[in-house]
Length: 580
Image 1 (spheres, rainbow, N blue to C red):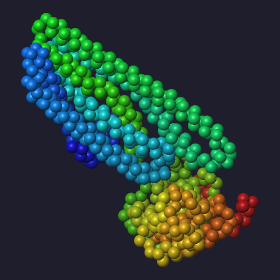
Image 2 (cartoon, one colour):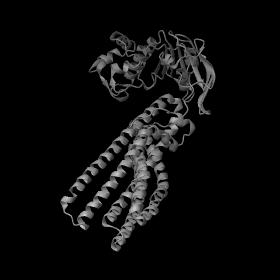
Image 3 (cartoon, rainbow, N blue to C red):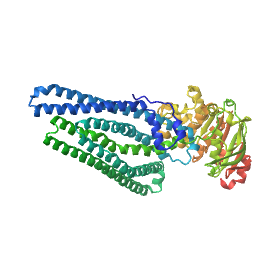
Image 4 (cartoon, rainbow, N blue to C red):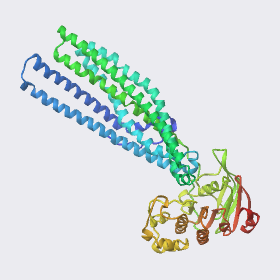
């Protein structure tokens, strides 16, 4: 009943990337659930009709025919069974809809995770972290109400009123006309009010995304804000933004209450008119009490699915607002990388950049016409001002993006000819702020090589000058680290990152500012570890520190996305003495 179909996963996104179409495609993947909703809705409708008929018949026997209570005991027992059956059907409907929504959410969230990983830093350029997190978490959760409330209520509203009308008309056609002409007023006002609230929902989603991104930036920069005495000022800004969001939320709720009032008004007026018509016919004797009670009991049931659809209409707007963020993200084209089949070289590779150019979005940043050689088994330092293109060049080298022009040769072969998994298995990336997850020191070290033994781990720690401080940790390699390596200093984390790279089978190592912000003692230790790491490997190190540059064999200087010169460390340090 709640089986989630995986077929045609990307078929719809290729044809129409609109949020409504994307939601329709996702709903089509749970078509068996929707079919079960239709069947259960029809069953619930029949149970409602039988309940009303039996209750009206019981009143007819007692009031008009003067029969005793004992004569209606079988009818009462049948009513209890029907009520239990109706409750069971509603329970099955709700539980199956929740299960189907959970499957959709799991599949969508999984696709989002895979898409974000595939896009990488290059494909996600211009997207802030806060809104992305909001989309993957709260955005996907908002889809649940669309699938568990709106779609089932839409099926109920399409089936039950028509079924009830067909049954009511033979008993009282005048009341049937009242129901027929009053029923369209409910969806009409639902749509009119919904259009206004839909814009508010979109605006609220945008506010929430911006607010989440702002709060994330504040949390990440909180130490700096405290140092510069700006924390209280930013707290006032957060309070102001929160108050604006609260006010906007109350506006949405006010419109939702207005919608509910309009729906209840038309349902109440319609039921009252049916009651008046039925009452006059009872007084005139042209309608029996049983038939009259049956029509009166069915009138609220006729409006109930329409009212519930109106009340759940905001779930549709929430789903569309979330889909407006999810669908474009899933439809983003993947950045061109490489997808060859050759196995990466096992020894230290030689790398040659030939006229390599790449621009983010076609215009900004990037590199232009880069010619650079990384000799096999050598250390090449890359220097330049912020924004000169150093990190872009490193990303091109590791295969996160493909050059728009030019090519990168590895041992004389175009980089695009290598299999991505094979190439990246020979890479080690040590950023300025190395990432460490919550877990033990051992678990973080084994990320690149899970099968390493104790001797290999100890050798890597010793080569990175990290063995002494690790041995002094409370539980040694079993010491738990906090998120982002909380519990260790910056220098200790850098050395652990070098040990992780040393432990991996990488033959090409890229380091981004490995000694930035370190004191002289830690800088010396990291530089010594860098020399050991470079043995038998090709190393590209991005740095501005004299101590680090002196360990390199060549220094390449980048200016405005181009390689300006490639010189020896001594020559570079001599000409740039004032910079250090």
